[in-house]
Length: 115
Image 1 (spheres, rainbow, N blue to C red):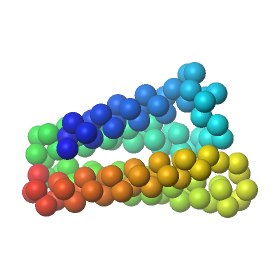
Image 2: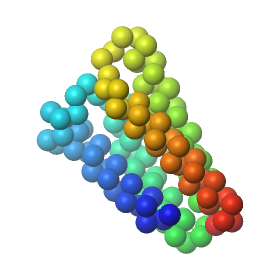
Image 3: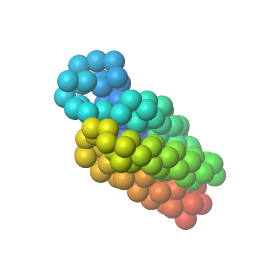
């Protein structure tokens, strides 16, 4: 689980960074900047959670739950923007939902495993 979380973190940092600072902007479509920034910042949290999971820290499940909550807040902000008529990419909604579900599962796994 720690390796999956770390890989997810690295991919998230790379993807968000490419859209914010590099060549990915042209491919990203209609982006919401605060969602990109949230993903970039949370990507570092993903790596921190992976380290905690790997070290079997009792804080791992708490950080995973905090990541899920922060992602949910970003998703709610995204939903508000979409309802206001801002042009958005539908795949972003799917990705945010996947991220929330993934981190809730990581939190559950870590809590049950007594990591």
